[in-house]
Image (cartoon, rainbow, N blue to C red; front, side, top):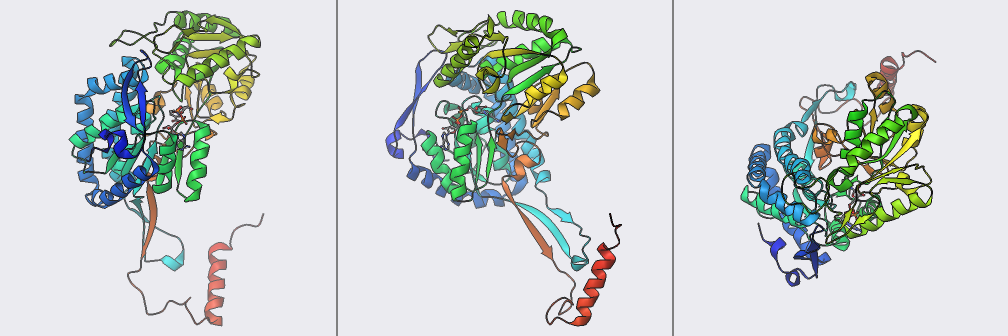
Length: 510
Ligand code: NAD
């Protein structure tokens, strides 16, 4: 593979972006911002390389992906070190949610792509096509552009490239300008696994680089904020390019009075603070039925108080890492200040921690309501606002009172009631007595409702979106002229009328 990613900024016709370690404040690399013309050139190379990659078929592509899987496990320490250095997250957050995900995903798509994208022989009840061969097939779109966020540089930026490659596409990844190093390392991994030149390329740069990519590719897979997602869709409309959008969330947790409060409290602390709360499917707000409220709040606060925060220095060193993206710290501070100004109480945390590096203390807020931004807007930080509700109906009404619909959770010992409540939550995924782990089941579709996105990743839909459906109809046995062809005749017209009534006209009238 050509080393576009290592080329100096000047060679790419752009300027350099410094990459910072958010846990130390040190600049660890400077990378080129690719210009629109450099992006166009990358896409041209991808287009030239793609047909051969498609032609080698699932088996050969699967071999490359399996070698890449092995490369990930062999090089896991190096990848973790890279992720930790550019995000400031803990070793564990990089290991569980990134290395394990990528290693599993390479194997999953290598194994499942041939099944999800196999030709589908069809049967039709329509007499006009009787005896003909009917097939639906999936053909790769060509060049896929993946644009990713900074919170999971491996899982959420690179992860979406794997099914695109497995389907036979060439891919250009535009990682977040905040965390581009992991993507470049993965380019090295794919090269080592034998991926042909130019089938995978990394376009480093900012929003303008991402925007330019949209103009030239055949599908845009975007993960990021809802605000940018709308801009991506608008830009893609100019060329009628299809998009997949995985956007922001404000995931509610509903705790019913009969829940196992120890498990619920452990989960609330973990799934709101893991990855520093910078998870699209973080628990962002909690509604607790009144009888369980005091005990739940006490248990959660105890657990959050005991969390260790700081610069990660290897396995087990800390629980909560840095705030990866500087402007995020301002959003977290603004949400907490707004809540406090409107009457909320901070039970623990509530402040940015002293540097070097960017940290916000793990924070529990109570006496919150929906006039406060911490309950209605995505905070994306280590904060957990908890609200007392009268009953499950009030919890459900408040959970659905959101423009977002990414994920949610319901906690109760009554599994039937829990599942019934889960089915009424407006979100793309809902867990009962759990959170987030559905993401690890690559068989399950994952995608947001409402302003949380468009389309899904994982499952059959997670790879079919990178293809175009093509219908094939093959007529094998036929005469010189079918009866419905020209010239029209009274006799055939009457016959077709009779046939229509016979086939479809026997239903009962309402
Ligand atoms: P962001 O929207 O600011 O940026 C995402 C990417 O878009 C970056 O690579 C950025 O350079 C690029 N970009 C910016 N402007 C662009 C434009 N006009 N055209 C094309 N590309 C452009 O998001 P972020 O701050 O990096 O990530 C955090 C957000 O991502 C949160 O809202 C989080 O919920 C969301 N997220 C969602 C999921 C999911 O699966 N639903 C997963 C992870 C993160």
